[in-house]
Image 1 (tube, rainbow, N blue to C red):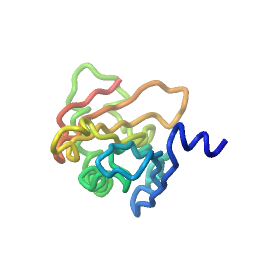
Image 2 (image 1 turned 180 degrees about the vertical axis):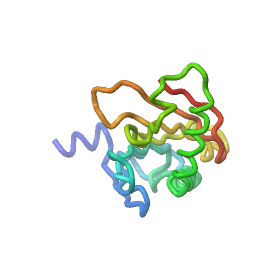
Image 3 (image 1 turned 90 degrees about the vertical axis):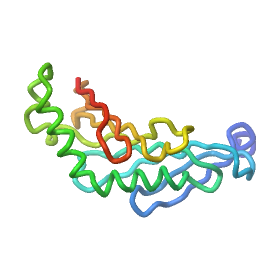
Image 4 (image 1 turned 30 degrees about the vertical axis):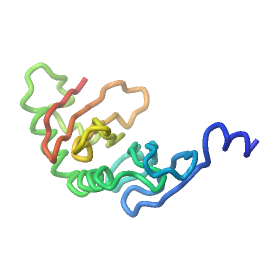
Length: 155
């Protein structure tokens, strides 16, 4: 089964990142110009559940600009949360829970590149906050572009 799986899906490769933990992909061959999607999940300090990371890269690992962008987001997460909080509190037609202290009920669920195939794509990310309670369907989604909040949606 292992050889068939490797033939069909590629061989599984893992790398370890000092900030976001283990990232994996499956590769077919050693062509560095071929794109691969790297995924991982890591429990960040202060978050209620693990965060999912999805990055683009090649057979050696995620692209450096995307990885650096994720590191910047993690390093400035408190400032990002403060920016999101300020933006949510300023919106008129929004649920009261988003105007209150939503950070107690939500965690950083995922960070993904917004448009990974565009030059400078390592500076644009979708950041999603989801409720810690699994049966809760609310969310906060935002576009973080070059260290600035450019779009936000909370429902």
